[in-house]
Image (cartoon, rainbow, N blue to C red; front, side):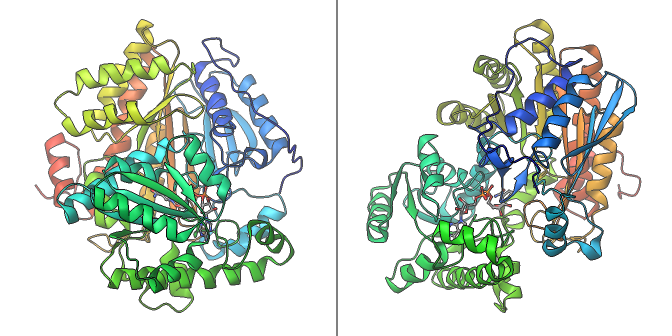
Length: 556
Ligand code: NAD
């Protein structure tokens, strides 16, 4: 609960090379916190909401101000502790220790549900940190776009000979992350029909060039999609409306997509999903006046939504869950076969995790896009043999507009992350890049998440629900000297369904940073390789052996 709502508050981030804090690591945490709440970046900055339902960067405005003050005053041998978005202590540590440690939304397992979370949230004792919202490394929709691109590229390889040309992908949810879907589909040469109940979200995607056109007319949307499909022309169409309402009508009309998924914020039935028959305003007032009825209606609508997905799947659509837990809600509502379509990780992403690959990213603290361009240029030269990577970087340069601090996402794996970390640190040291660079990743990474309905769904050895891994990941990254490390619960799929950790490390051009970068950018993706090798994945075992990762019980 916010003690100071400050509705009209606008955060203006620091830019340039001038230091306001007592060191670049503190300055980086400050600028990344502010970046998360930048008007261009956050979905609802006035409520401190960054993305993903109610994923917040700080518990309330009072806590935000206290975090800013603490970071400005923090010494180079101190560590600030954040408990669910509130700064609770500053302890003396040492220069190589993380400057900030964050624990967000964690609940003892028997209490780990939305009901208990909301009670605590109302009392002002908790905050939902999602993944990169509460750990200050969200970089706008770009942060998800490569993962979404890779998912659709792999689907295209498996199902359509390598391209989505002449196919229609139907999805819903054009929020902070879901908004990447239309661009990822058109980058794969396909047609995307994306439903969102909130027209302002659709407009935002058009403004930032993630989406091409919009309509509120179902007929028109279908016609546009079908014409583009026949012509083999990439096109993305935003359709204003409720997915659970429109999809059954599509079925009645005989429309069936080639590919089908969903990215409404179904993980949070109270704040992330709009039930059938409600305008946004009506939904907002019911949410306030009768939250339990809202949740009931919301879950019923999700069951209808999933049933429509299952029908379209039976009619031939390649269907997958996109990490929002909608299958679980539908199953709890009595849709017995809700898990008939797979999650996107086991279907398309796991082989990347086996090599320690995941949504790695860096942001230019200077605010100067030239710094990112410079790193792109060196990356294209140094990694020129990696065609897939170079293709991605060129496409990103052309198609992705920055939100807030300029940033680049790049799915690099074990070995390559440490290599690039050194390259970036050298560029900062030589002054070719104008200010330090922040390097981090999503929690949805190779070895940093336990989420049985998503990242760890259907693990080979059945270890889906084992959450020792993200905890080990956070601990080894803290020991290695990451700049800030976080441990969260409930991101992506909601309370009770995930535990995950984040890490961010600053390349400030110093020798100390070089040593820390080498350590952390090795252990972090290393945890991904180890987690999957331990579960018996051949590719991970091969990677561990080839790269010389020491695993005491791995059979030689
Ligand atoms: P968001 O809250 O910013 O956006 C959700 C969107 O869904 C909103 O625009 C909302 O208007 C729309 N919506 C809600 N109910 C609807 C309905 N009935 N019909 C049509 N539209 C509706 O969330 P986000 O950041 O875009 O994330 C979306 C979901 O994806 C979350 O559950 C998130 O946890 C999950 N997720 C996916 C990935 C991934 O890799 N794909 C990663 C992390 C999380």
